[in-house]
Length: 440
Image (cartoon, rainbow, N blue to C red):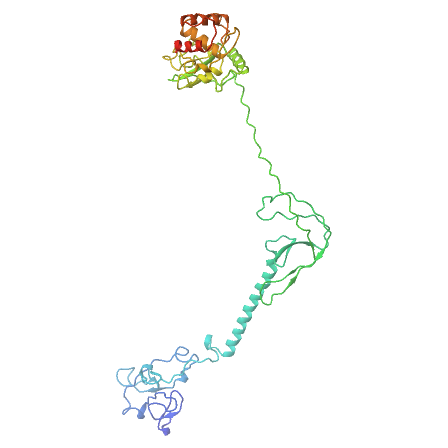
C-alpha cells in the first residue's frame, strides 16, 4: 500500500479512495492502519474466508478480493500474530437501504472461459444447441423413413398394394395369367365359399404409394405390377344338413308289447287277453294288432309278479290297458279291444266288482242286432250282462265272444220275457234300455 495517495485501493474497482464508499463503483471501503484506527492494536471484524469457485463469480480467484495481514488485539488468534482480513465486510454489514440493500460491490457471476452449464461461453452453448437440434432432426428423419417403408406392408399379403387409400391386388409383371377370386366381403355368411376361377390377360399398372402428411417424406413408386382380375363374388355355399346319427333299433319285444307289472291301486284296468306262455301270448297280440283290436298303450304283465286280482295268479301273462282312475274311464280302451275284454278293479277288494260300459252310455247310440252271425263289441257286452250279471246262460261262448250266436239270441228272448217285451230275440233300443236298467 502506498501512503502517498492518502487512501486505500477500492476492493471492487481498484481505484484509490479516502472515503468510506467508493465514488466510482459504490463499494464500501474499510480502512486499516493509521487511516482507520486511532491505535494499531484495535481489533478488526473478521469476514468469512474466500473459497475459489464457491463464492462470488464462478471463475473467482483469491486475487480478486484484496486482503491484508493486519494486527489483532484481544483473544483473537495467537498473541502478536497478524491475520488475513478481507477488505470487504460480510454482506450483512452493507447498507440495508437504497436500490440494492446489502450490496457489497461484488459483481454477479458471468459466463467466461472454463465455465460449465449456463456459465459456459456463448460460443460453446451455441455449438451444443446446434448439435442437439441436428440430433433431434436426424432421429425424426429416421423414424419417418422407417414408417414409410414398413406401413405399406402391415396387414397386407405380398400381392396387395394401396391406390388412393384402397387396397388393390397386384402381381409381378412377368407373371403368367392366373386365376383368382376375392374372398367374400367381411360379415358375409359364405366366407368359405368355393372359388370361381377367372382367367385374365396380364396388364401392367404402376401403383404409387404416397406417404401421409409428413413434411419432406419421400415418395415411393412401386414396381410395375399386374392388376388382378375383377373380383367375382362366389356363390353362397349351401350348408349341408347336420349328420343325424341313427339311433340303434331296439330289440323286438318278445311279447309284442312292453312289459310292466300291475301294482295294486284304487284304480281300474282293462283286461284285454291272457295266455299261459310267452309264445301263445305274442301270437295272440299279433292277431289283435292285425284285427285293429289292440288299444294304444297296451302292456303285458306277469300275474305272478303283479297285484293279486286275477283268477289264475300263477304263470299267466295278461294283456291289459290302464290303470284308470274311474270305473268307466277305461271304456274307450275296452270298446277298442276285443269283444271279450272287460274292466276290473285294481286291487283284490275291487277285482270282482261287476263293471259294464253299457251303464254310462246313451242306448240310442248303441248298435241294434237281429241276425244270427253278426259281430260287434257291443254283442260281447250284452253277452257279459246276460251271463255274469243276470245269470242267463249264453251257450257256446268259448271262442265266439262278440258273435250273435243262436245261444245269444235265445238268451235275449228269455230276458225279453222276464221284462214283458216281445220275445223276438232282437237287440233293439227297447231291449238295450231294459238290459241297462236291469244290469246297472
